[in-house]
Length: 114
Image (cartoon, rainbow, N blue to C red; front, top):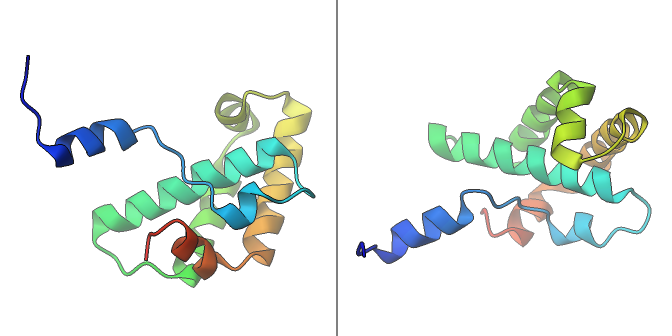
């Protein structure tokens, strides 16, 4: 049996965790697939900013998220959200809408990123 440090255990457990902020998770006006896609993109962007040691703010995260989601292909989105091509396209559109409408700074606070 290996001995692990607490930080190593937390890192291993959270390696595949997707951050879906409360203000997105509890919305009733968007598809669940859109919430999942938002979470995937949000998590990737936050992790990238942490890795680079960059300042994390709503504007930077929003810009990165838009670029990231628009670079994703429909098959990429299908894989992340386990959905049909039609739903993947709708999820992309809704995710871009969420990025534009939602307070990303509040999402960062809710997710205890900042």
